[in-house]
Length: 168
Image 1 (cartoon, rainbow, N blue to C red):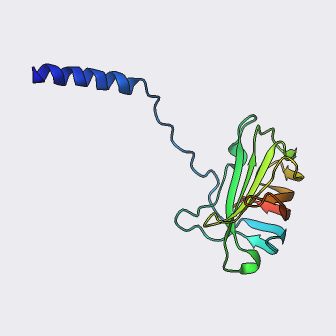
Image 2: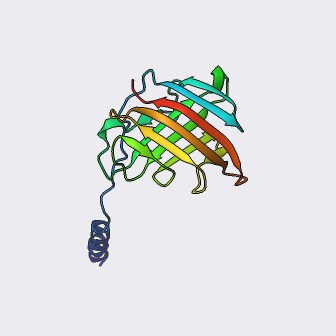
């Protein structure tokens, strides 16, 4: 009797696990971290100049999808910086939804997030915030001019301007 119950349990378990879709692996960084020179200026809640990314450390890994992104996909660039060589590290993420190649993207097509490593401070673009994100033909550099809203207060608080680069 126990053997029959074990066989029934095995059949039920097998049937249940066959309905689950296979797990999809997370994409790995396409462009390895190198000397990603930046020329970004923060004004408002954060002030200062950014000229380069900080070295990868633990979960703090800079990554860029770069030229491997195809039309209709999501293009993304995440990197870690400090202003004027200071001790505070900020995470910056650029995302372009429905990627169309080199060109200019507005706040409808792109998102920019700046946040502290402990996630207590964050700024992002809302629909009302003006964002101009440009990308050159390499899909690895361009310019940004973005007004960001404080995620905690909902008030305009940070401006990010300059050029970005995710080439090693």
